Amino acid sequence: MYSEKVMEHFSNPRNVGEIEDADGVGTVGNPVCGDLMTIYIKVKDNRIEDIKFKTFGCGAAIATSSMVTEMAMSKTIEEALEITRNDVANELEGLPPVKMHCSNLAADALHAAIEDYKKKLTEKET
Image (cartoon, rainbow, N blue to C red):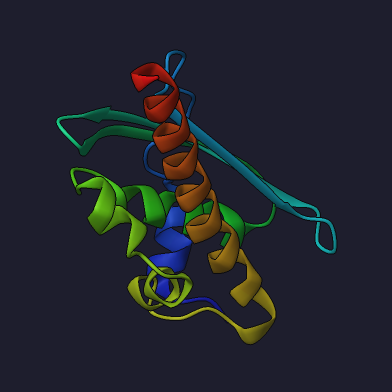
């Protein structure tokens, strides 16, 4: 049902945790399945210097959270914003159709964290 890559990221998730003084935080959830993801980013010189996640959900939700953090690490803000829902699923070598919403959450949480960072940046400049 799940690829080896999904199982690896579920069994050994990368970048789990919270960044206390995060530059951006994005939380998204899916009320239908109950999955909830929060992604924290630390940005330096317009690059994601550190990224962590906390996820309450199924194995696919944990795997997609782990994968999106690996994909976004060290990318510029603009590059990270280009990571799509399908990119996450493809990097995990596919997800069952019934679990595709999990990859949506991971990309959406990343984008929400970046939007939060941009908002805070704008507030500092004014």
